[in-house]
Every structure is written in C-alpha cells, then in structure tokens.
Length: 242
Image 1 (cartoon, rainbow, N blue to C red):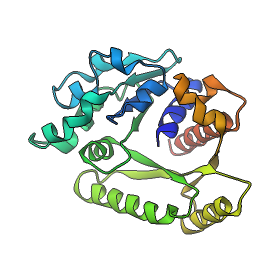
Image 2 (image 1 turned 90 degrees about the vertical axis):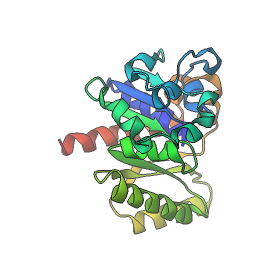
Image 3 (image 1 turned 135 degrees about the vertical axis):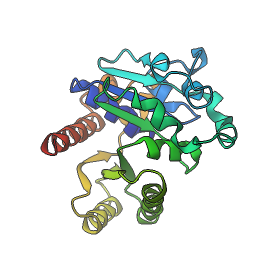
C-alpha cells in the first residue's frame, strides 16, 4: 500500500539507513507523496523499463536525509503493452536495480494495487515481500490470493523470494472487527505478523497530500510512531539474521 511504501522508506532513512524508494505504479502517488512534482519529471522509471536507461541516472533526491526515489508518472500507464513484446520482460527491474545494491541498504518498491507485469517485475527483483493487510472483513480472502501469487513467483521467477512479514493496517481499536481480524491473522500466521500495527489515523491520511512522509508531517501522531516501530522491527530482524 502507498502509505506503507512511503512511510517505511522514510522511517528507515530516519534511522540513517541509505534508502531508495522505487515507484513502479503509473499513478505515481509514492512520487508525489515524498514531495516530487510528477509533472516536472524529464525521466522516470518508464525510461528504465522501456528505454533501458541507467538506474543511477533516474535517482531523485527527496529532500529527506538518506532517502532517494526513482519516480513514476502517467508515462508508465502503457508500459505493460510495450513490455509484453520484449524478451526477459519479467526481469527488467531486477537487472536494472542490481547495480544499486551497494549504494543503498534498503530498496523499497511501491507496487500497483493489482497483479500485472509491473508487480511481477517488482516481485522478481525483490528479496522479500511485505504484505500490508487492512483489518477488515475480507482480509483473509485477499491474503490468500496474495500468497498464491507469491508462490507462483517463487516457482517460476524468483525462488529466493521470501515473505518479510504481514503488516496489519487501518486498525480501529474502537470496534471489535479490527481486533477479531488481527487475532485471526496472528493465529493463522504465527511469527509472520509484525508487532507494529498501523492505525486508522487522520494525520496519516493527510500527509501524502502535503508531499510529506508522516514523520515529517506530524512526528507525534500515532501513524508516525507505528511506522517508526515497524522500521525498528525490520532493522532488528536484519541484525539478528546477519
């Protein structure tokens, strides 16, 4: 989800980990969400996927210390049709980002909401997948579809892909539904659900329209605290498995 890509990337950067946010969604919301003007871009991730531009040449400074972005805009909309005719089309992003692995400690890829060739590129390039899961009624049904997609990617394109964890989002502590969904997910997937839970939060919803990650919009908000906790969990997990 959009909020997670932006705010996790910014939280890792806040811990002084060099972080690259890669926007592979034609809507370009992650791009505008970190304050980059989509209408003023000369080059985007479209040039990487279609024109084989060097990834380093597309990197944009976000103004947030330790955080850069490879941006996206509407130019990417028709890229699937163009990619469909190219050989190795599922691995374009993987090979392009390989050259950046020593420059950044973390590379966070913001995917489109639907499964398509762009999403497949992202999963083929990734070491792991973080699954944001809304605490709502149909959560389990949607999760099963995501897990099936991951299994297909593992089988056919990226056998080393793993699940980083499941992140509970849009959690409303005032009602029973969110608590029931959270309990069910933790029961079915022991050890795979992050302790951090992202709440329903007005400030969190407002931040993208101001072109800022939540910790630069309202560091005291519950949303900011939750994403910083998520970043700490990921860093600690990495340290333990180093």
